[in-house]
Length: 445
Image (cartoon, rainbow, N blue to C red; front, top):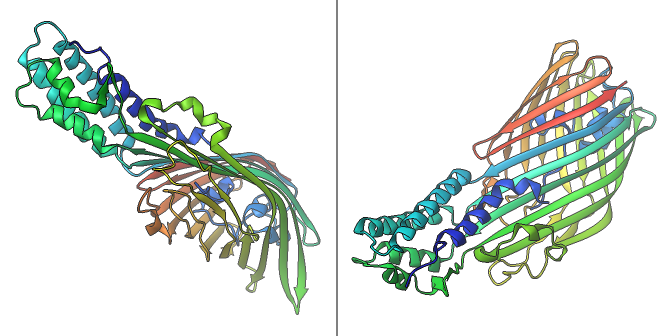
């Protein structure tokens, strides 16, 4: 019996496609991080005590009423602010490339065996490639790739009497994982370990249930688990004088939409077109609120203390009950709990140094790690309209990411060019497993 030319190549090409989809996960829409502007992005994610008015609604609404000593005290607009990040827990992309190369080599070897007079060298090559493919598939088993993306726009009119801001943003996170079924590996191992196979029939028999009616039917599968949070909010802030001490208070009522996407499928049926299918999505909208407070200390008000509570009203949203493989991948729940952060900043005419600490954690969904950050950041005015930024942060809840992508120490950098009223800003992030960037265009008057 002769085997079809697609023998192993086509189905395992689907497997490599399923894993490779992880490399473009950012284009898919599990609990996403809080959206931040490019300035905060380049300063380690800090800003509860140091955000400028245009970013106050994102980090601490009370800062719309704070004294910024002439730095961005007027009307500000951001159109738009964009960020993206990519992380993987191993060298998944390189491994997928290697798998695809091995599949092509195995296909060539199998086609040679299907000839009338296969040589022992052809058979040996097929066995070697089957063994190599099994090893490579084990290497990508239960590996994860994550993509984040965000888009936002902001308007702000700061004032100690009544600061007003309006913002709209959305942040998403998608995690893709692969699961290689042991039966697929057993079949490849049997081919690799055959004792003196003579022809295609010997290899077909070794494949067993993996081979049926001229096709390979692998049991391996993949899953795309994603979530997104979008919000539109109105910020109001004012300043009170209490026994000679100014205290800034701010509040942001907002409309929030939560969305999840959960799609799992066997390798042979994995279809990227299904990523837009509504039957794998859930969504919910609700009213929530952020609150914040801040005050200045020191002889020249060079110190600022800040605190904020974002998403004051806890919310949950479950993924779909049936993601195609619910017996393997159970239903998950996305939570949006209050995030309490405190911060301190020291500011002069040429610098800002700041630190933030999350007192609560933002829970991840599925294999995504929980997040609870302690962060340091700085901004330096090196010229009249040129600013340089740097920062670092550590996730205090990083151990919860052991089954997926571990959150470790992240380092950031950024710059701002602000000739006249224009603002052009960019930030970058890097760690052992993640890279990212942020760009922003705005104006301040």
